[in-house]
Length: 329
Ligand SMILES: Nc1nc2c(ncn2[C@@H]2O[C@H](COP(=O)(O)OP(=O)(O)OP(=O)(O)O)[C@@H](O)[C@H]2O)c(=O)[nH]1
Ligand SMILES: [Mg+2]
Image 1 (cartoon, rainbow, N blue to C red):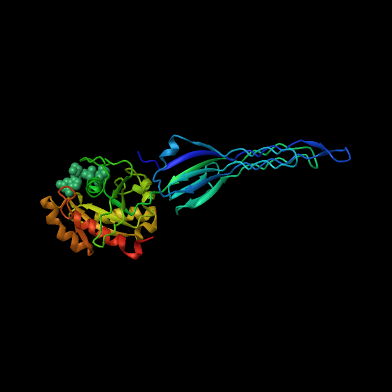
Image 2 (image 1 turned 120 degrees about the vertical axis):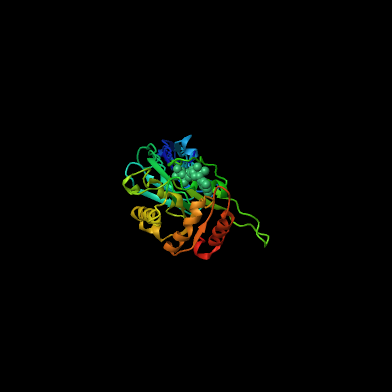
């Protein structure tokens, strides 16, 4: 199962205790020589490109850095506690769960943030009585992973999104002839093939968003909740099943879905959309295609996700768009 939010508890290491030690000087007088304790370790979160989900945090929620070492006699300073490094996939946002304060958006691999500082070490007894080390900072955090898919597939329920994603990628979603078969976003990877120049084309990550319907922004159907997963995609595939569309208003579904995207986030409408008409193996859909094309006045890609007709061409278009400088990050 794909996990995209997690709650964890972090605690910086306690500072080491200061030392209470006395020594006789040359004149035989007792003088203090206790060193201070070391600082407790910090807890850091770092983006790591080898990770893609937050699933590990279902099994471990508590993280703490180690304690600072105690001070010693002869002014010896305690050892600093070891840091605790938590690795997360790039694209993870870190919030303080109590205040909802955004601590950091870890987008680039290697980005890191200190989420809990270790406590200060206690002073030795040089000028005053020795002190205990301070406790480390404690925090409850919420991690959110916005999937950084390259392409988002949006469309009405039953339009064939799952069939398409299973055809073009490694994903194996449930496919059935009823609306809202897909209840959570589905991720798939189109594996990069060898290019003629001998290099490899990069993988393309596609994401199916559960079906959207009119008034989804008001919570109808499954609502627009899952649209946050495609906020950062490079472009969208807008999938249309002409057999579901009202023949008098062939653009009704197209416009309605775009309106829902706009109501969720205006920027989603600015993304390039590849308009794909599915199920053209059905004679009626093939018949309605010219009318749809004439009304929409934009490039339309007809496919049959079931038989595979037009699918290769569509993948080629994705490839070309992905290699364009505008879409490269
Ligand atoms: N004839 C035909 N049927 C198709 C085609 N693509 C999908 N279907 C059928 O349409 C039905 C719905 O397909 P899904 O892929 O589950 O559709 P979906 O858009 O993922 O649906 P939801 O997840 O419920 O939103 C299934 O019965 C598919 O077999 C196609 O190209 N031609
Ligand atoms: Mg589906």
